[in-house]
Image 1: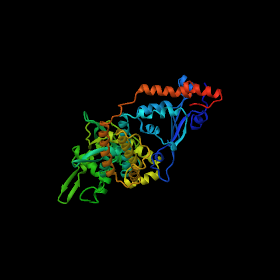
Image 2 (image 1 turned 90 degrees about the vertical axis):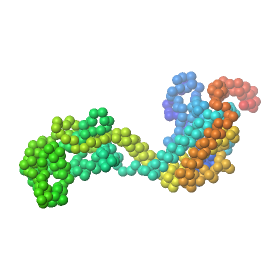
Image 3 (image 1 turned 30 degrees about the horizontal axis):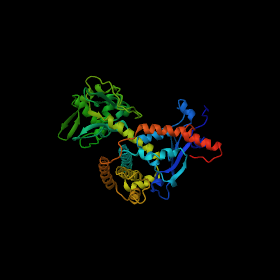
Length: 457
């Protein structure tokens, strides 16, 4: 067997004479092209007989260009896809002569039997592919209406707390209370999935954020802020949180007189004994905020939780997946196609192909055959979709009605249920024999050539 020293691509298959069939596919095949449309090509090639005699693993089952605009299948995969009633492959058997770029004589063996590949199984495939196109159209609609822009959100945006019958993010709660996530500590709540008691390391906050090392430092800090007299309370939200925490622990830190609140310094000095040494909590996430999980901490006995929180892990995982998909897509999407799609708020090309596939499925079910060229049938309507003249809601109503129409047509169809696998096996065997010169037609042609006569086949 000849060693394969080079990549097996279009050029290699042509040079080795392995190409069986090449044809125009896509919008130009359907008669739905526009002036700026590219010409896409499909094809079928056969594996060298030496490859089939070996394990064959080194020979690819398909070759394509970087954009998949040009794509060829090996004979083996081509027939497998026909058995599955793949719409794109089934259509290739009905390509008009003027759209066929090359055809090896053995390909006529398959084309002459093409109607035997049209069965009731086609309907499921055509509906499935139509729905896939609808999903693609809907996915682009989501990207248009709800783009996931800006920097990626962190786990912190998915840690929530109950607020007035609803919920809000812990990020907002911390901001409103003058607190920082890096000084928080979480502890699992028994038998409550993804729910935690949240504690706060007030000593660490005082030490590292305000450089408070003794009671006198704390007293000065509190006095300077309290003297601002903002509604007889602290202007600094952190001090409000600190004093609330202290009173939750049983200290009478604030008293009242006829003129407003007063600080009870004796109680504050006692409270200082509880807050002069940092606890060393790990924070909700790491300091670089690159976590994809919350962090748990060890909490000293007797500490009071400041909040009950819940981490929506599933929502965060879904968001990360959608964010990645959106930004991967944004790097590689067709800008012209995207801008046109904005007109209708969905992927217009996918919407058009959904309508085309359902229409073709109905025609097949009614025994009208596989109608590739849509000119004179529904070309104008399909181009209205492609050009963004049909709004998303109207298209969905239309597709829903056609889906039911196909099901009704399928129920009364007289086509066979599925493809005869023995027929396919004999067909591919016949093609291989003729291509490799092992069939009776090949033998006759060789005999004619040796006698100086015209080939019969």
